[in-house]
Image 1 (cartoon, one colour):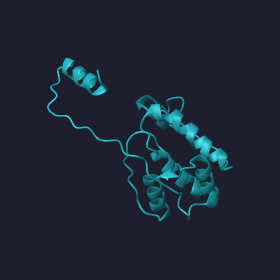
Image 2 (cartoon, rainbow, N blue to C red; image 1 turned 60 degrees about the horizontal axis):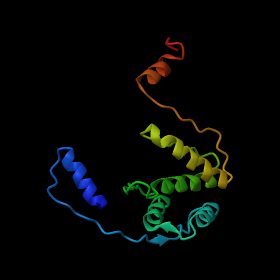
Image 3 (tube, rainbow, N blue to C red; image 1 turned 120 degrees about the horizontal axis):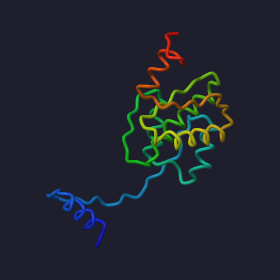
Image 4 (cartoon, rainbow, N blue to C red; image 1 turned 60 degrees about the vertical axis):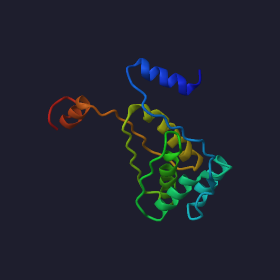
Length: 154
């Protein structure tokens, strides 16, 4: 049984009626070099780490950020979105040692993976990271922090 057939069977066994099917053909990746105007250390890191080049959407997205334009990058899971903003952040940190980067993640599951990626790129670029703080915000923690550690108003 093919994966498509298994998926259809599972859907039907779960009470769903499959009305239509569409298959998308695989696309070959398109590569592009890192933008020329990114900090040289970041460009060299990207070239070493990705010898075929960046995916074309990464290179275009990074250039848009370097041009001080807003960017909304919506691509599939594991398509390299993080590399775009981490590279842009690394560029900023290499150009301005006093710069600060704030990265917020919406799900606990992402945090450990993302922390490892941040540490990897920053260490490779000899950027000292003094604080990587991760907090899981929920109602109890927010309440505790607002009131102070002992539950009393500061």
